[in-house]
Image: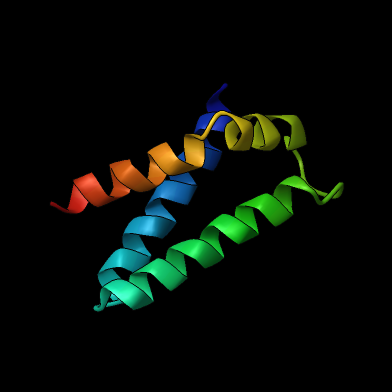
Length: 75
């Protein structure tokens, strides 16, 4: 479970970074969309590890939760 937690934690850190780096809400939204798309693409890439976990996280809306947590971290 440790590696799986690291995958989500890395995703959260990337979101926080993009929220800090991008100053306007529109830029932030675009950056988050790109990160979500990348996560989904990685879940569909058979060369990546932990595909089942990534797909489980997507199906159970963990990405949405991660985005909300990242936003809360900055408030």
